Image (cartoon, rainbow over all chains, first blue to last red):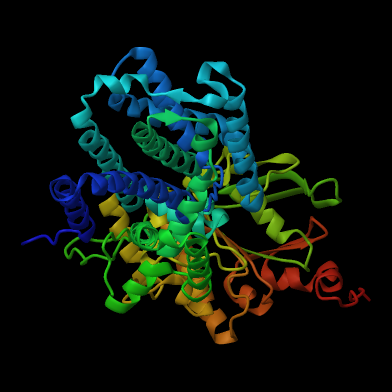
Length: 337
Length: 248
């Protein structure tokens, strides 16, 4: 019997193929843009995992993006190595910070959590501004980039951003399709009922936070390799979260595909309308408002309604019943229910 | 007389919210394996708080909760679910964006502790028994009230409980629907699961349970066989709002 291949793995394979082909078909400017696209999409996917799937609306996400960037600079410069291996540290340190802050973050809910995490990002920015070890207001330069031949920088920057994006997307899909994802989605609908079903929601929230911040940190690290310099104001900028929310809302919050389509629309708008100056922001704002009011499921929700397709399905479906197996429900004492 | 370890022992439990007056006052209750116990009482008598304390959603101020002889007082709700306490909620709290099948799968995989294939088989079995066969792929949020109540019960069964807490599961249903749910509960109980059932529909409850506990102001004011318990003066006065019939 031929087993049907899950759409999600087909889509992941297609994404991998597209990412591999891009350097062959894009110009230098196109590759720069594609690198930024990968970074921004990875961050949007990670934020959507938090806000869309577990209800953790973390407006302070720039804290972890900036921490990823700063970690990469500090580690690579200190060790005197090319920056790329330091992306791993750029993922690890934000995850550790998230773990350390989690007792405080999870004492807050809803708007309090949103504002509280924003304040944390601001505090991180101010701390960096007054700390000479991280370059204070002037920030840091990526000295070790000179170890990478100039001709290789652009393709390597893209390659690592693409790897981070692919890992982010795959990790999120695999996570959501697993038992963990089942608990996560249950928790999104009802914390109390999820607990009553045996889901330890505090652990699910913590693991989700750590995963999302590690992925965002890695993406941030990739971004700041391309910028050669990092400053507190850029690293912890609220622009990061503004763009992320715009992409996630536009594409469709709470679906894996949503941020992908949101990012495509965002970059199409930006690349075609940014010459309009303030007009571009007005159009973007109006679009966001329109989508929020008339299309709460986002662009992906509309596409899905029209052509009934699941590119990255995460739901568990009732499968064909296995005949010949006696189904039993036994309680903890081994009694037949 | 019961010689077995009780399925549940609520031992001298008190509970108050904030600095307010106690909602449960030094309450002690024992439920035996396979027992189907009804709990009634006026609004504010502490019924739902009692369930919250038993299921681990609310920590008691004092006292202990023992399940199958084990002290679970310090455990949270998820650990207690894994330890055999299944519960439903007064207002159905289905995982509305998930399918009926997935709603049950959560309980089977987490509290039930079943592997993927075992969980799938257990879920199929419960879907059949609870009348969801053929509708497993429906979104839970799209179900009518009776089915959402039924889903509450099915989902609790998926946790493979030894003790089932039902909080007004027949509330809001028509008489026929309520009796249908009652039949399902009796069937579950006959298969060995101890059940505590809070219900306002007394006639539905008395048709199913073997024992009734009446709560009033956080205390047990009557406990016994349904007909006798409902006839006691204290119950008639406090719960039914009737004057006690004085002995001649």
